[in-house]
Amino acid sequence: MNKKPHFLIQFVCILAMLTAILLQGFNHKVKLKPLAGYIPNEQPVKLTFKTYYDGSFQNYLTDHTKRNSGFREIYIRSYNQCLYSLFGKWNNNNILAGKNEEMFLKLYLNEITGKTLKNCYGSEEYFKFIAKKEIEKTLVLIDSLRNHGTAFLYIEAPSKTWIYPEYMPQEYQDSIMSFCVQDYYTQLLKENNISHIDFLSYFKSLKGKTKYPLYTRYGTHWAESTIPFVADSILSKIGSLIGQEMPHIVCVDENLTTKYSKQDGELESLMNLLLPIRKPAVPKPIMALSDTTLRKPNLLVVADSYFVQLHESAFADAFDRCEYWKDNYHVITKDLEFLDKVAVYPDVYKVIDEVDMVMVIATSVNAYNPMFGFCETAQNAFVNHANTLNK
Image (cartoon, rainbow, N blue to C red; front, side, top):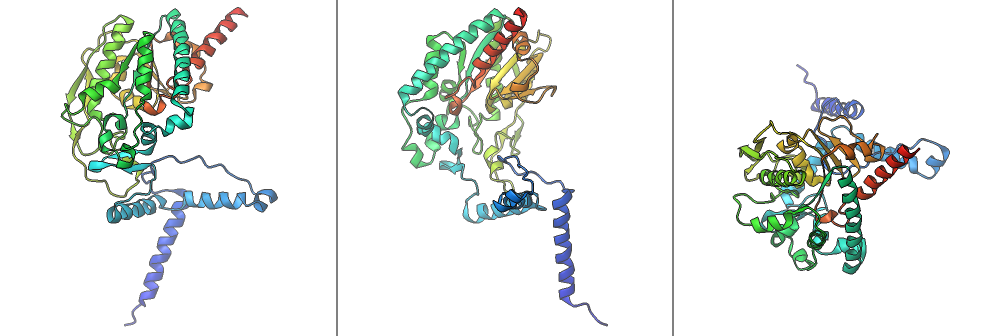
C-alpha cells in the first residue's frame, strides 16, 4: 500500500497554519487577551502620489500589518516569556527591578531622584514659586465653591518610591533628592488652612506595622489591602467638612488570593508574559458600607489613577453621584451615563454646582500639576454661567 510522503502532510499542516493566521488577521474571530500598555491610535494614511513618494503610505501599511497580524498577542507573549524565564529580563524599559524582587515604574524613579523636577521646572526655587501660585488659584477656587455650597478636599496620595526607597535599584537610591515636592505642597496647604489628607506621612508611619505590604511587589498604586483604611479615612473627613454623618467602610472578607487586581499586578501585566508569575497571596478585600440609610451626598473627584480602586469599591456607594474626572480630562461616571472628555461635557457648571464636595487626588509624579488645571476649568464654568445670566 502506498503511503503519502511525509512532506505532503507537513505541507498541509503548514498551509493550514498560515491560512489560520491570515484569517485571524482579517477578522480576529479568536478572542485573545489584549496586550497591556500604551498603544497609540493608528492614523490611517491614504494612498496618493505624495504619500507613496515620501514613503509615509508604505510605513503606515507596514505598521498596520504588524498591528493586525493573526495571533500577534501570542507571539509577543511567547517571546517575552522566553526572555523572562531564561534570562530574567523583560521587553519593557519602563519597568526596573529593585531589591527583594520589587519592581518599580521608571516614571516614579525619575521623580524621586529629581529628574522630573529638573525637566519640569529647572530648579527647586522655581517650583516653589509655581506651587505658591497654584495655592493662590486654589484659594480663589475654594471661595467660589463655598459660594455654591460646595466643600473642597485635597488628597496627597503616596508613591511606592517614597514609601519603600530601600527596595529601589542601588543607582537610584544613591540619587534620591532631599527635597520632596509633596512635603512642600503639604506645608503650603497647612499654612493656608486648606482641607487635606496627607497619606504620604500616614503611610510612612504605617510602614512595617501592617500585616501586608502597603504596596505589592508588582504594583505602583496603594495595595488593595490599604483601600478599606484609605476609603474610611476619606469618608470620615468628608463627613466633617460637609457637616453630616457618613458611613464607615466595613471589610466583609479579607479575600486572600494570588490572582492580583489590576492595580496590584500592574507591572506584571505590562510585561505581557504568556504565563503568570508565582506570587504570594495578598488581600483583595470585599467591602461594604456600615449604614446604607444615611443621606448620600454628591461627589466630584478630579484625580489621577490613584482614585480607580476607590471608584470601583464600596466607597463610591456612599454617594448618590460619584463622578470621576481623570486628570481633569476624561469623565468617568459610575453609571456610565457619560464617558468622554471634560472639554466637551454638556454642562460643567451644573456638575460643579450640584455636588456637595470637590475632591482632588494627586500622587508625587502629578504634584507638579496638583490640580490638573481644574482651577481654570471651574472658574471658566463660573464665568460663562454668569455671562449667560447677564445676557
